[in-house]
Length: 207
Image 1: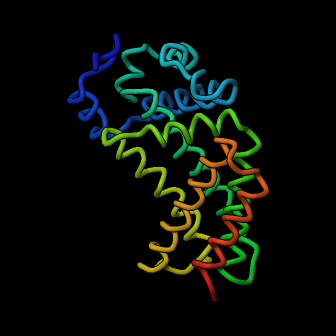
Image 2 (image 1 turned 90 degrees about the vertical axis):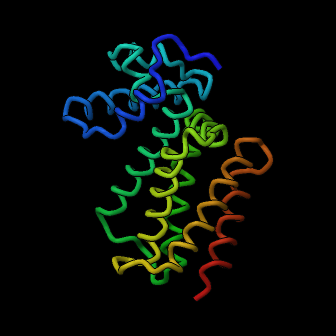
């Protein structure tokens, strides 16, 4: 596949990823992510075009490609950003629920409803996750880690996580992602999504 105009080589992208970010670079990255989310919310996956993202975030197209070698890299990183925002919001107050099952249900229900409020954005983010190949492994890992942290935070309620907790979180996040894909494809309703996720939580986290 030909490299898009303004895109860096893989070696240059890898070099940038290993260098510590300055405050200016972090601010630039944040503008890029915000521009991406705005475009995705407006028109879904197809509305996110690298040139328009560069224009909206006021960076050169070549600079954008140095940070994010493709639209898939960009959207998967944006999904990690959104999940991190959810996790930080949840950290500000105690997660309601007497049992880990109740707390995980609360967190995943909130996450599901948050995505469903913006179907265009959800379509863009989940479609990018589905399109991700081995070159996007680091960004996909970031998404999975953020989702796992959300679930483990709810399960443990401030206590250290065990290896079993990590395994359970992996199972539940796979179910969660799979049901979002089914909803976007029109195969299940929003109510059916939650029924399926709640059943998975009950089976995995029996107290």
